[in-house]
Image (cartoon, rainbow, N blue to C red; front, side):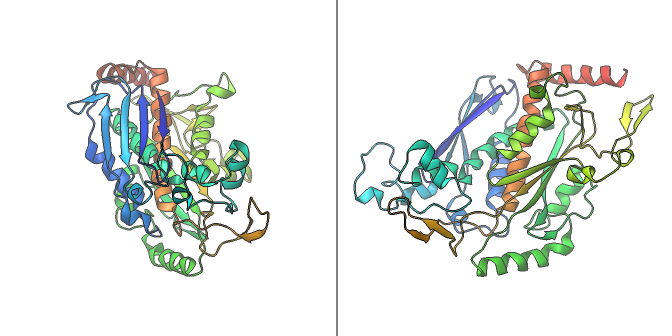
Length: 388
């Protein structure tokens, strides 16, 4: 399975091509749109989310709500493009009128400057339009379809916020997927620990008044994942490595942790390794999940647990020092419309890319041409492992 996205933040639309989803799977468009809406929500979001109301259009690969096995083509329109149609017109030549919103003072921490240097753009809008996290809307749409496939295979997955700025909200992180989903549905921060809602709201409000931004930590849990996805035979076949790369590919993510991650580095081996047990009815199991569902680059049947650290958004309303790329004068960086924090949508985006990587691993391991065949093969595979 592979996918590709295209489109700019203020362009006409985001476009996605998803190849390798089995034929015969029912697509619930409402569920996709619910995830897109959730990505736009969350405390600390900016004014653009009042303009955009993301809705996916499926324009290929699906008929009568069922996948055909051919590439699925997806479109998410950018409503804000109506205000940018001349500036972002793909065809018309440059004029003084349509280059009014040029960007020449790069933002520290953003792709602006290095992207302009690499691709030879002196209007840095050419960089920021694609490097914007707006692109993740399409990854969420694709991830939502992958999540539906995982559900068809009895695999559950959820992402939630574990920390906002310095405030941790990770109590009861041992809950199962259904319990996590219930807990995070009760607040606009996607946190489990309800006692931290007010302190985090106050932190976000004060940060906004200060013209500053916040990052945080998100956590994804996937359960009932078959053992043996991935491989130990080569560095590039390890599924945990692929997962880490996919999560690092999400905008503003600066760290990835699997299982106990960095805490394991300060622990003794006897406290970190997941001891092995066996039951006649279930086969092999682990007594803990410190390693986050992976051993030797392969899933081991335990819950897959992945955390991601998101840096604060680099667009600050109290802009930091920059340099005009034409005059070389020291000036304040450009200011673009932005959020105080995007940690809530980050939890949904990271959940989406983990779902995508799980589906990739499954369709690499089994015949993904047809859903019924795929389900049958996975069931046989599970039985084989249980009887090992």
